[in-house]
Length: 176
Image (tube, rainbow, N blue to C red; front, side, top):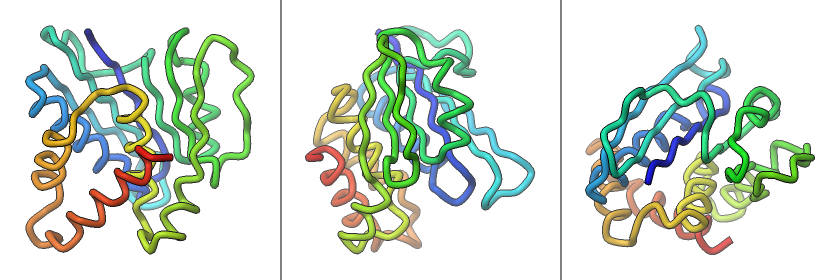
């Protein structure tokens, strides 16, 4: 089984962070993985997306042009990528920032007010992780022990105090 995943938003939303987290979830789950970041000329505020492949088999190309799973955190990203989502795919949308509703009947969309949930739970800046939690829940891409191990790996040592906040944000998304 292969999951071609595209994560998209603007710089500063943590798209590359959750991409790396997804890659480690796959790696620690015994899968083949690839992680390919892409961002515009400005780091914060510019466009940003990340291709992640998680597969039982070797991965031919790290570039995801037709994702099985799409996670979007702003309207320009939604507009740009919703048409490329494969039929039968799943789209995870931060509905606190994107008010557009998908008119495609061949995909499943999950509308999560991730930015609002992050603010309400004193997790400012972790809407990305909440939305990733929903993706994990709806796809079964990772289990509990793998999730904790991956979070500990991806959160840098100088920000170790944020491990528990990231785990809390994942849990909020998984329970939404």
